[in-house]
Image (cartoon, rainbow, N blue to C red; front, top):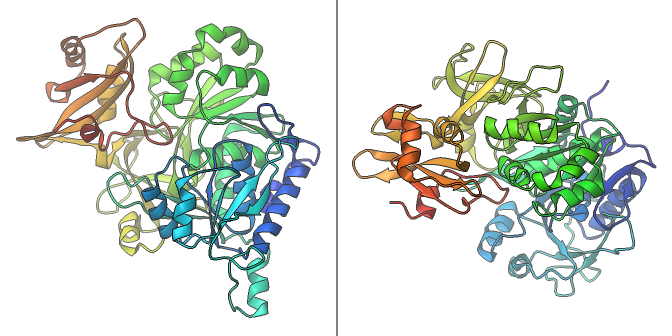
Length: 524
């Protein structure tokens, strides 16, 4: 079977009358209507002068429209979804860095991106929704206050020859850029990651194969859809299998079980902090859980503590699949397996798409059992960062992409991540994996959530700190927690500072972030 290599091919997989997109309080959108919506979006974008590989920034809240807008834009141009929570200064950076040709916002939106687009002379289109129409349908209307556009509402056309213009408007090809995202930029300037149709379609197929997705499956989307996890695993993978997705307005633990009752999903994918919040409300929603059994639960984007995995499985009575992904791989790189396959808690599973290996600093691949940097290669991996030769020379070695994660592969090919290389704590020359400390702290009966991180130290350079959220109704002192850790780990790994918080600061996608946490919490 020929691999799917464009979004047009991917979206042809579902039967015309089968549901593709569902959402709370809205009629559902069939695959036939979804394909019509994508075609309409492309016609409207062409009217506004947008051609293949032109960058279209999308600033929309979570919901069915951002899913279909992403599909529509990426099918014939380049989609650049941005976090709607950004401030004006951030929009200024991202819109400029991307060289955006157009900005799409919701009708009635007052996003600071609109004023920034005006300053940068980027035309703005308003996404207009008729609530009486199926979820995900919309029209694109020129903003009344747009600048830099022609009289008919589109950006000024180039003077390219007719043949070149026709080629630019032709169907997207496998190596066209479908999606651009920025790296998180926690330690450096964010880098642009261009992902081709071939990249994202390969990853969607990999995820579908790993999870045995089929037309009968429905995924409940709680991940933000400006992030690789939500776009590829939550949206593209189920649609590629002819299945459906239920688009919520974004993660809300208070509404999760109501959505579950309405959507009747067979699975969902989320980050560990979301799973923990869901577990916090599971006890009072046992009837809904029993009435709507899940085929599996997926976790990705950051480490899932084994304690949380086992609690999820006990509560939902299903298998939890932990996967490993990153933007540069179009998301999934490795994954644990569904039954009857082997599932090893504490690992991120076996290679699940691209080839995965472990490399030393000199570029030599290591044998199983040796610790080094995790590297990948394959059809889903980006060809390189945009306009950044220095980053590319550091990131690629002998055709392998260096992930920046430290790990070890066992004799069965199961990968364990021992830490992010930039997150390893260097305490006076002693190297400490914060994940190792996390795992011990999560075994304390009073600990609900934890993140271990480096804090500055005037003599050692760095020392170990931990931020902890306690379980409801439980208590613990810093001394008690430190004594607990000291029973399991060497003294130099025991946190010298423990902070008890109501909530640990998270990134935009709900991930706990170690880098920069000491400064956020006023340490050093």
